[in-house]
Amino acid sequence: MRIIIILSVFLIIFGFAGYYVYTRIMQAFSGTFIYSKIFLIIYIILLSSFFIGKLLESVSIGIVSDTLVRIGAIGAG
Image (tube, rainbow, N blue to C red; front, side):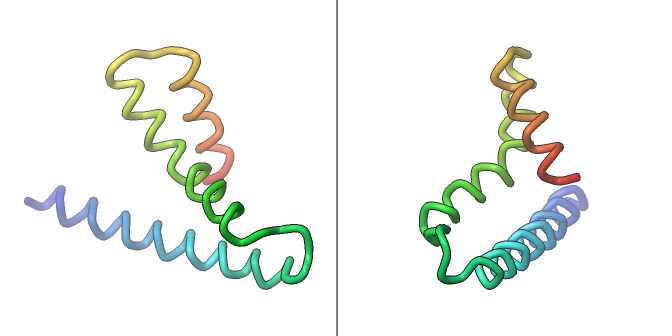
């Protein structure tokens, strides 16, 4: 039960941090080339790529999972 609470708190904090960064990027580039819906989709994919890569690694380690983990690690770091 504790792991569910800890994981939930982590995902909530991670989500709020991602939302904050997204809104600041949209404010910084308002009126330029960034379209909000397209950027939001790309941003969500980049944020979740680490977790998706780790889930794929639990099934089978391959090029796709390794690439997703690397992309997600760069984005998080």
